[in-house]
Length: 438
Image (cartoon, rainbow, N blue to C red; front, side):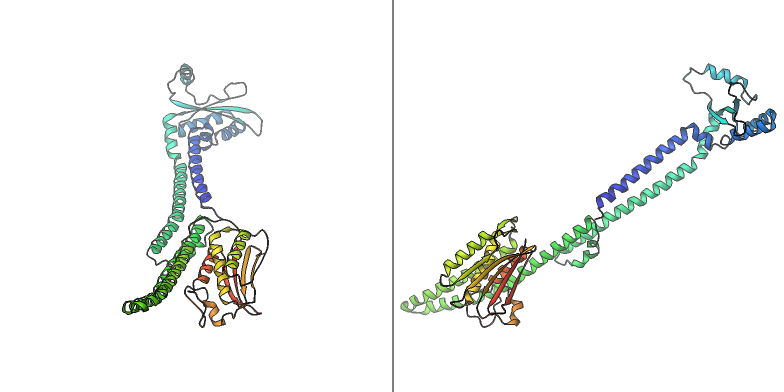
C-alpha cells in the first residue's frame, strides 16, 4: 500500500528541508570569507596570477598587477612571505596599518573588510600570505549584484514547493470531493457503485476507504431494497388472513348464538396464524437489523440445543446428529440457532415417517458447513433458484408455512459471510446446506 500518510509526511519534510537548507546555504555564502574569495571577480584568481607574475616577470610586474587590480576593483593588497616581510610594496595606504592597529580594540566597524589567503606556488614551493582590504561600500555593492543566483535558486525552490503543495492538496481534495458526491448520492438513494470505481483502484487509504464505502453502499441499497420488497410482500401476505377474519366475523355477526359458538375456533385459528406470520416477519427483519457485536459461538452447544428441541417437538421422527467436535466461529449464536431450527422444522414438514433426518456439521478449510437432509419428495428443479425468497412456496405444497423459514436461514448465512445452498439429494430427499465463514 502506498500510504498517503507517508506521502504527505515526505512532501512536507522535503519542503522544510529544502527551505531550511537554502536559507542556511545563503546565509553562509553571504558571510563566509571563503565564499567571497572564491566568487568575487577581483579575488578569485588574484593569488595565482600574482604568483606567476612575481616568479616569472619580477617584483615590478607583480606590483603593477596589484595596482591595476586596485584601480579596477578598489581592493588594497599586501603580500607577505614566510618570514612576515613584504614581498612587494603592495597597494596598502601607509596609514592603513596604523589606523587598523588603533581600532583593534574598538567595537566600531572598520571602514573595510579584511581577508587573508595563503597560496603556495606549484613551481617554487614558496608560500605567500595575501592580505586584502575591501571597502564595505564596494563589498555591499558586489553582494547585491551576486544575490541574483541565490535568489533565483530560492525562487525555483519556492515554485517547486508550490507545485508539491498543489499536488498534495489535489491528491487529498479530489478523492474527498468524489466521496462527498457519493455520500450525497447515497443520501438521495441514487448511489451507483461505479461512481467510485477509479478511486477504489488506488492502493492507499483513499482506495481502502472507497472499497469500504462501496461495500457499505451496496449493503445499504440491499437493505433498502429488501425492506421495500418485504413491505410489499407483507402487505400482500397479510391480506389473506385478514380477509378470512373479516369473513368469519361477518358470519359470526349474522349467525345464531349456537352457530356463533362454532365459529369461535375458526376465529382463534386465524388469529393464531396471523400472529405466527407477524412473528416470522419480525424475525426476518431483525436478522438484518441485528447490531450486536460478533462473539465466539460454540457450535457443539448450538447443535445439541437445536437437536434436543426438535426431538422433543417431534418425538415420532428420528433425527441423527453427526458433527465434528470443537467447531467454533465468530458470529451471532441466536441467528445460527434460529437458522438451523428453521431448516430442521422445514425438513420435519416433508420427511416421511420411518425415515431419519440427518444433521451434519464439518469444517471445510476456512468454512464450516452445516447441512440438514430429509427423505421427502424434494423440490422441482425449476423452483430451486427461488427457494429462500421471502414468502415463496413451491407449488403443490400442502405443509403449513409462510415461506419465511428458508429466507431467515439465508439472511443468517449471509450475515456470517456465507451462503445457503438448497438442492435435491441424488439418492432422494432434499438437502439444505448452510456455509458459514470460520
